Image (cartoon, rainbow, N blue to C red):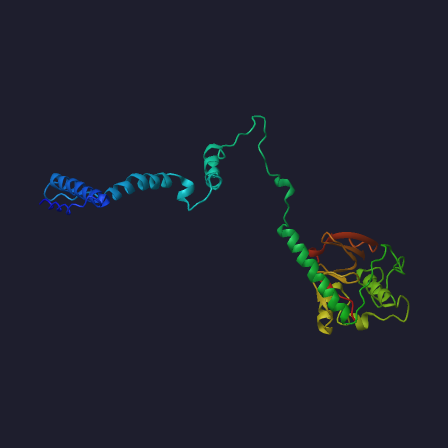
Length: 281
């Protein structure tokens, strides 16, 4: 539908401005009418301002989103490089490859320097601890552990022949020598003697009877040797324990070893002695 053309106002020669305005209005009306007639039925006319926005604003938005710095919320280009540079460097640095010079010797572990305590050493350590504990308990009961003395034949009757000694044991027998050593350690190396057959082994003078005598009197005995103890053997023999050695042996002094009625000194394994009779407290 065409719009009606407004009628020209009545003539007034003096009002030139009014006529010019009238002509501009008619020209605009004709132009609008011709554009309206060119539009197809049902077609919407495009707004020129919308087109302007599309042409100017949309390319700017696309350019802004294509720049990483703007897409990260306004971070500078240097910040973006600082973030991405480690990733690029990790991909191109070849950090996973290792080169070894051909002349390098393989590394080895020196196993010889490693040591461990053996079972035998552990047993000896435990035995030494048990021996020390028994000696300490025995000392606490009133017995003073005899210190080690130089080996030597100090028996006072080395040349006696036959008969009984003042200790009522036969001269130059193992029992007489050991009984005298017990007196020496007790501080009675001469008469009156502290220990004689009557109060030491009254049930029998042979060496085989000494263990029973210790048991009957309740005197201490053990398989742990101490200096000054009596080494008792099942073969009817006794000896005097001179020293207890760190290698698990004992040094003995004795008479009549081998039935020669003479003085002897020897070192044997401590475990080879069936029982050690501690000096009476």
